[in-house]
Amino acid sequence: MIPNLEYIRAENLTAALEILSNHKYKNRLLAGGTDLLIDLRKNAETEKIRLIDISRLYAIKQVNEDGTTVRIGAGISHSQIIKSEIIRNYFPALNAAVKTIGSVQTRNRGTLGGNICNASPCADSIPALLAYDAIVEIRSSQNTRLLPLAEFLIHPYQTDLCRDEMVTSFHLKKITGSFGSAFIKLGRRNAMSIARMNAAVVLQMDDRNKINEARIAAGSVMPTAARMASAEKLLTGETPSEKLFRTAGQQVAEEMIRVSGRRWSTEYKEPVIPVLVRRALMQAWAELKNCGDRFLV
Image 1: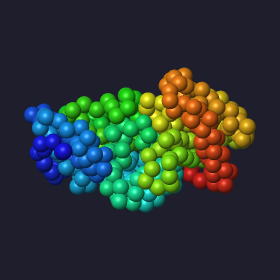
Image 2: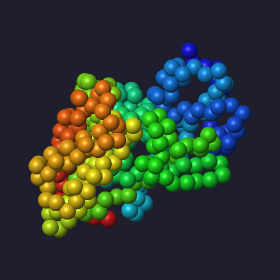
Image 3: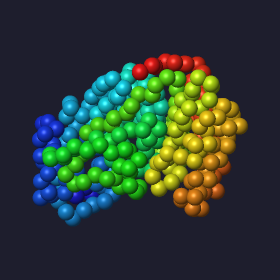
Image 4: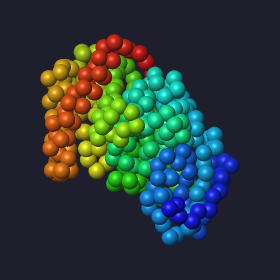
């Protein structure tokens, strides 16, 4: 049963932050509600909850391009991300990731900020944002702070967000020169499926056809989605090949076990995550070869 609620709709961002600063009730933000309403039903609380509706705040629903940086509003829906030409051009792995979220109805309602703040280990948008080095913009009525997404995610379903704060946007820096990226998700079915594992990768090449920078982020393999530093280091400076990518995938599996230990799911995940990472790297490499210097910033 949904607990006792007080509903209030914020007319603008300033009003929403001011309401959040009042701790008389436990405040919960309502944007799309696709995660929140389920959570309210599952975790009935005795404390009265004030539901702050921010679904009509235009200020957090925009995608703005500013020189070398793109700012994506936290209130943007997954469907809006899919339609955004800016995101499709500069951050195709994010575009691919949100396409796999839920159903059309879920993508129409659910927001990027909600998907991140829910902080599920299997959230599809998180690995893509990690691979693009996303910075989280967090605001309260008194302060604004910027935090790398990797630091924002503390534990499963827990973030570094105070009671009087809300996430307003994500800052992503454009990648210069030649790059390729990819997102792969493994679920129990092809649609409306929670990820059993997912991975996002970005490859950038130098003029010698060597990997100048590699970014690999995996979800649902560790307590929180995370970048795989050891595999990234292994790839840097090397010539791309399927053999190299297979080795990097194995490195990810080893990192998973080092961090998470051996659990009931390890028997399944240990041989599968290397394959997902290898396939994602192969896709990114193919994209890079096909597109070349698409965007020079």
